[in-house]
Length: 115
Image (tube, rainbow, N blue to C red; front, top):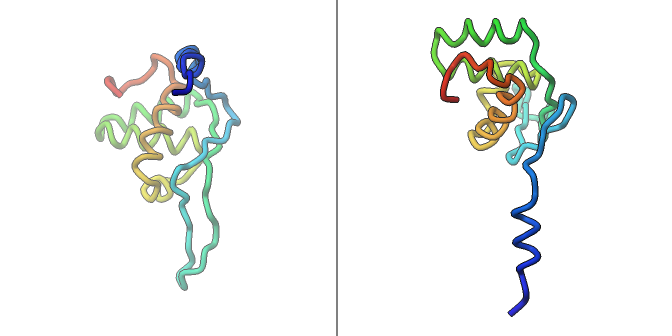
């Protein structure tokens, strides 16, 4: 049987990735934007992250009055510079992962507790 003790240590010692503005978050599930005739206009394979601003925090706080889902949508759309229609079409796995990354840009300023 192969010795995996070093592999386990390496995995245990690995620090979680710290995402920075300008990083490209790779989507696990590619999104194709199509024209009316069905031809692919654009394939989205990653989202480019940006740090949030005061205006973004205001938008998130305003959206929070509509519910946690709306606030989450605003966080992701603003941090990834995507329109809400694109957010709505992203795969749930990608949204779950990228929302955690985007919310991390807000630190403790999350106005929608528990996210």
